[in-house]
Length: 148
Image 1 (cartoon, one colour):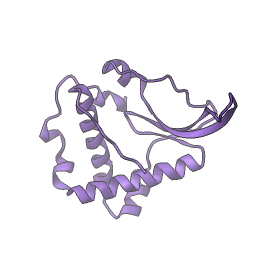
Image 2: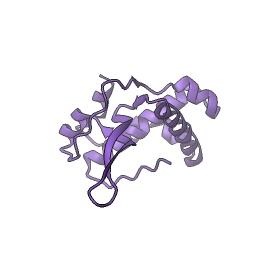
Image 3: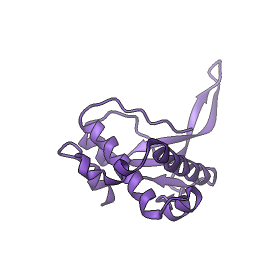
Image 4: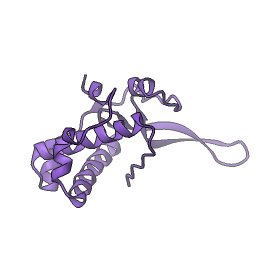
């Protein structure tokens, strides 16, 4: 149900982004760094993190290492949610998260405590950024999200 709000029929209006408008770019980056660290910690414990538009997870892949040798490795990936892919008509490889992988939502309390922002600010900042991301998908804009 949480994902529904990222299926946009109309462009994102500035009034839908009250938190992002209040925060400086520096502050937004600080919050997302906290989110990024949180996701990293979960992935190290083989836990996937679902963030509304998709899921960060560690998935097994086959890496080819010369002369037809294949090595099973695990790779962190972002897997776009199926309804989102269908809604925006996006192409991407079918990636399955292993069944035994637990999936969690971001713990905004924990991220807030670590980044010294209020819990609501962190949650709204993340949701509004994802709304912008969905808006860019809707309008066929180039999107670049850098995660270390």
